[in-house]
Length: 626
Image 1: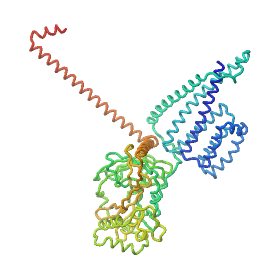
Image 2: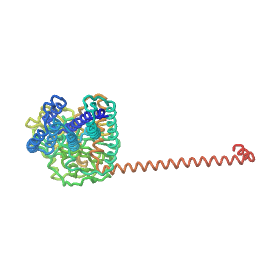
Image 3: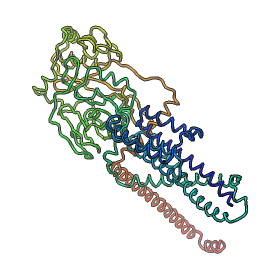
Image 4: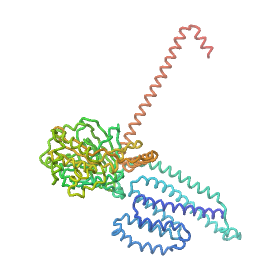
């Protein structure tokens, strides 16, 4: 028995040692996925960690307990320097400290307490990654960590029990003359028992993981959600949307169009074909100095609290009502993106600010958070009657007719293109078609280096991206006395059939024009010629990408964005569906019961009728059957 115990201890020691290193690797990988480690830190940890698997390197650089403690205390000044001068942040500096302490523990002789510290440090890394990333890869890593942690803790308890049993066996064997009990180096039994024990630990760990997952999922959806303050933020990559602010440089949209990163996902409800080709407006700009656009004209903006439904305009507006939910990635812009003629808006993360002058909506900057909001809009080719009849004020008209110093040829071109056109609508249509027909789309434009970029676009290069087309049309309209403005937003073209959402990327950024026409209000024009940036992809790759994006949407909507409002909506929907199902089941039961009752009554009446017709033969027949 003593032999089996010693072999058991050796096997479980190796198993527990391996699981501990797996946990260290998972914790480190989670920080890498959260983009919290620079390449230098990555190499400084990865090389010693991989070297620890070599017995020669481990033995050569093995540290005593005193040396390990000395190095840890020696690192504290470096920690302060890292926090104030290198990383300039408490969280990254603390993560570097945790990695350093892990390396020290790895190269020290390890007892039970040291293994426990390694597991604890790995858990702190996972905990930090949970608050520093919103990537769905965290979910996969977290499941692996929980599984390995359960197996490690169970093997640790079995190992401790074996240690106690071996100590007791040694004390009993110390007084005997049996030499076999005093030579543990010759032992080699119990391998089958060890395989069975380790397999049992893994199976129990897997079953425990499933039970914890089910219980955790139930508690997650049942317990009310609360904000986590600072620790709810992520320090991952923040999208730089330089073309969506109160002041932008001509060409900013073109820079965004080179980025294929996802900016937002839009979950649509109802007929999704209604959303095809629609533009998602963000910022409206009115002042142009020849190189920069800015927003100077602002209305009496007012805000509404987070979590409440804000009514922008009357829902009686003519048109088709559409509902959608936007999940905006962490970005540098504070503008929200909505469809034209928005009716209601609801969000739970920030108070929103609405500017009725140009229908723009802003929120507190969210470089560390995903922002989710729901909105209703009305789609119609006819503008809102209230807005269409509203005349521009003197201040607004002056702002929308403002022009910088321009090349005289621009004035001449605008007049020649709109020759014989009478109404503002006709003039705007002529300019729009002229730009679409005589100029080409290109992201490789260098007009900004010229003294007058618009003139260089019109008369020299004759190619550029949407921002040049929209800016040129606004300038030409203003030379004709037509109030106009430029709008920056996105044009959705990528739809995921699996997730039932539109995926809007940086390359979908777009600029268009709004011109004010008498009796019709602001009209939308898009002078940019048609172009396509779609690259052919393999069907299998597209399908896998759609499934991953659908899972990402689910993760963001039901995990990261699961709040008290979503919770109430979910349980209300479940209650309505369960009530509807119960009512339907009751109706089906009653209908079947009535059908059976009618069948019995019909059969009984037929039997009675038959008995009356049969006379004395009917009782005799009944007696024979009985």
